[in-house]
Length: 133
Figure 1 (cartoon, one colour):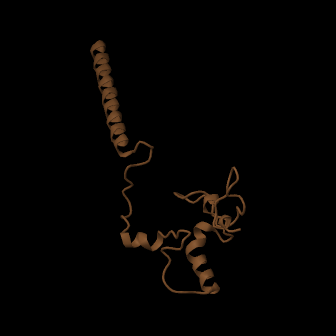
Figure 2: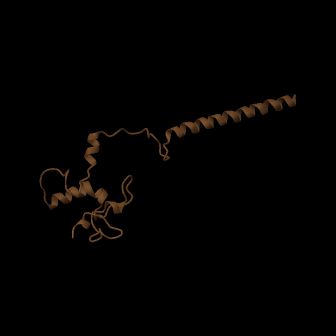
Figure 3: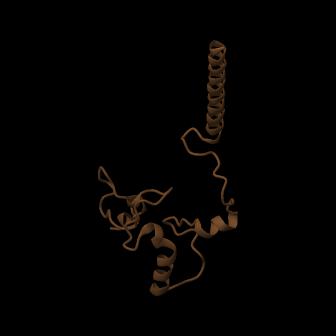
């Protein structure tokens, strides 16, 4: 009787271990399916996709030639106000860029000033100012 009981529990334990292993493998397979090659989730499942209009309101990049600027004119006070509300978040209050922004170049890449006379050096600092004498 004792031998049969021990055999019963041994089989039951082996079945439990097998079930646990299968559940673990299935869970890993599902998790791997949701993660991209770089380790980030392939889908976050929260929020909603931004419309083109929403992206256009904040995704502005004005090249050095000024194309893309809104029509009209302004003065120093208006320009300062626009810079503080639209540009300073990335370029900084001191025009030297803001470090640590997610999904953005680091602070030095967002600089607008500095680098005068450095364009032809081994390590040029490329800013708006570096193109003026």
